[in-house]
Length: 116
Length: 114
Image (cartoon, rainbow over all chains, first blue to last red; front, side, top):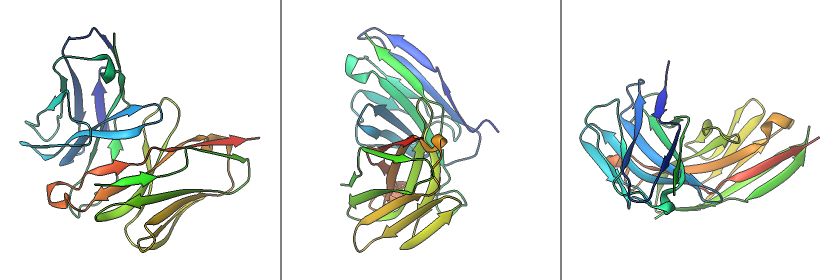
């Protein structure tokens, strides 16, 4: 099982450039989310989705867009990158409701982004 | 909103027992979870407490007291490979109908010494 797959693993951007971090899961999970992790700041929720066509903001949504056109994919878009967005980004998914595993979040391997 | 507090660092020796505490403030939540993250890796699920009390999984146990807004992760028979960061997390009750987003504490870095 592939689980949660993130691409790219590493990316360097210049200020003002745009890019999309890809996330795909093959576990038929309804819930998907994006976190960023900075030293000493833990994992902070950026955006999340409970199913295709439904997204909502987390703790730190500014500067990021998401969409959920399919159950499998949940891309994160940076429209105009800033140095403050230098971070490690994790995509994570879980089952919803009362399904087995609804309390277990499965993470991708992470994407390390540097904005110069 | 929600906030979770846990110690930033804990040090212990091999074979010892260590407890990592987590206190939280939230308007309501569905359970307390714990995740482990090794340096450079992704967080992985360790345990979940939906009800008050102790949950045991091998060398790891987790405890929840809703009345005290408090939980802890207990690691027994520490091994060098347990050196990692440990995060507590709560699933938000207020947004349950919208998915119940999971909010994490800032993490506790555990160092296990020989």
